[in-house]
Amino acid sequence: MKTTRLILLLPFLASAVHAAGILSVTPLNSDAFPNAPSTGTEFTGTTFLSTQAAVGNHTVQAMGHNALAYTDRTHVWAGYGSGLGQPKDAGNFPSYLNGLSYVMTMNGNRDNVIPPFSIDITTAVPGTAYLFIDNRLGDGVAQDGPNPSLVLDNAAQWIIDEGWVLVNTGAKPADYTGNNDILGIDEGNDGSINQYASIYAKPITGTQFTVRSFGEGRNMYGVAFAGVPEPSSSLLLSAVAAAALHRRRRSA
Image (cartoon, rainbow, N blue to C red):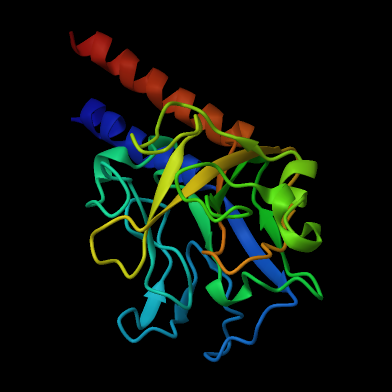
C-alpha cells in the first residue's frame, strides 16, 4: 500500500515541478482594461472578469488544448486540424506546451507601437519561454511563417534580434508550407481552426524576460513558460522514485 501511494504521488510531484512558472506580469503602455483591477494581462493562477459575457469571471488554468488566449476575446489556443477552417484536434496540440504556466494577453494591445507596448514577466525559476506568433504577421499569409522584419516601424524586429527561435519537432498541418511547429487559433471557440500561430522558444537564464510590441491588427501573441526544476525539487522527485523502487524490490 505504501509503495502504491509513493508511485501515485510521483505524477503530482512532477506536475508541480513542471508548472513552476510565472509569478507576475507587468504590462507597459497597455490599453485600459474596463474591468478593474485587472490590467488586461493575466497569467496562470489569476482570476479576472473578462470583457466577454460568454467567459465571465475566469481563473486562468495551465496551458492546454482550448486554453483561452485573450482577456478580451473568446479565442482559444488549440491543436490544429487537417487544414484551415477544419475542426480542431486535441491530438495535435504540442505535448511540450501542456500544463505550462502561460500569459493571457489583451488582443486590443496588438497595434500599440507608439509608445511601444511591452510585458515584463517574472518567473519562479529559469527555464524556456515560448512565444506564439500569428502566421499572418508581416505578409498577411496564414499558411507560411511570420515575417517580423516586414512589420512597419520595426515594431516586431525584437523577435529576431532578441534570440527567439522557431521550434521544429514536426508538429504542423498539411497545408502549412513552413517546417516549424504550429499552434491553432480557434477564433470564438466554435470548433474550427481559423488561423495558425508559429511557436518560438528562447532559453531564460534568469527569472525575468520581456516581450514587446506586435505591430499589426492580427491576433496578438501568446506566451508560455516551462520552468527548470530547482535542485531541491529534482532531489525530491529522485528520492521518492528511489524509495518507490526500493519498496517494490522488497515486496517482490
